[in-house]
Amino acid sequence: MPESEPRLDFRRGMIDRRLAHTKRVLLVMSGKGGVGKSVVSAALAGIAAASGLKAGLMDADIYGPSSALLFGAKGLPAEGESGLVPPILGGVKVMSVDLFASGRPIPLSGSGANEILLELLALTDWGNLDCLVVDLPPATGDIMLTLTSLRKVDVGAVVVTMPDRLSTSVAHRVLELLKGGGVTTVGVLGNMVRGSAKYKETGPRKLAEEFRVPLLGLLPYDPSVSNAVEKGNIEVLLRTKFSRSLQRSMSAYLRGMRRGTPRASG
Amino acid sequence: MHELSLVQGIITAVGEIASEKGGRVLSVRIGVGELAQFDIRLVRGLLNDLKKGTSLEGARFTVESEKSKVKCLSCGRVWAFQELAGPISRDEREMMHFLPELLNSCSRCPNCSKSYFEIEEGRSVRIIEVVLDA
Image (cartoon, rainbow over all chains, first blue to last red; front, side, top):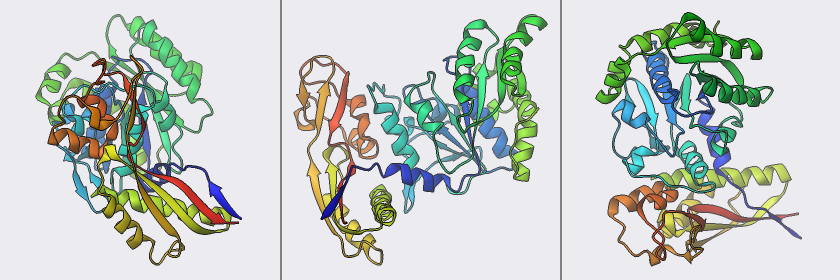
């Protein structure tokens, strides 16, 4: 008797095969919006590329994509024999829904955003990468769940938070979710940090201590980041005090990647 | 031509099913949703080309076009791509070719003009059924 197989989402297998040539996926997440995940992600990918690593940046913020803007990427990606070819800017392969939507609003209900993420991951030909940085959207919904469930690839997460209680309370939930879920928590990264020394330290450090993960660094609030974003040029962003601080914060991690032994910095 | 990647993904996935189940694939039904605007003859041709030399060479692939079914979550109207009131530009068709969900970016419900709808059927290429000999 013939046996019927239920429907199968073949894109999951495609994603596994695409990412088989990527040494490490690094999720930049916070749970909360407005803490600077996109700028951290873009700068981190740029720093990785500048340090000699083969780097990619996947913009998983489907509702509010900004990676293309930060890198000055425009227009549909080229189609190669093996899939969509991400544009390379500042040495970084960049993929974003905005290369297709070109600034149009992206109102999606239900599983729509996750469908777009799956399609982009299934179709993008990243080639060989040392590191694929993924800029996650706020919230702990389908997109985060999809990305933290990637199979057959080493996945790490950097949790970005501002020092205030609102940001750290949401980052706390994300760190809780990451515990024991197969994703390595690389560490906590404080962002837009200013104020008294005590205030600056408290939130991110407490989080890192509670979850026993490294405090990667405390990135300063740097007004020149806004100017760099206006330029839409990653090289301008990489010259800011913010990026220099990020580079120091992630130097041990990136050094480990260059040696082929990614690990948490500290 | 990302159709090639998708069809290769289908061939690999069906081959994996057969391998896991330890059976021979008799037939495979593939749906091609209208929103992605694939050329159905191209999909058929790619399936026939790519199955050659694999364990699926003897399997029968049938390819069916699937009409779109879009449900407005605001007024409840169920509609199809052809019912859109406004024209869809070439650029918009092209972005939907890669990402059918971007229908939401370039159209509104023909009944209530809201952007609050979801695609229920007919988005892109999919595996409907794989039949194995037991």
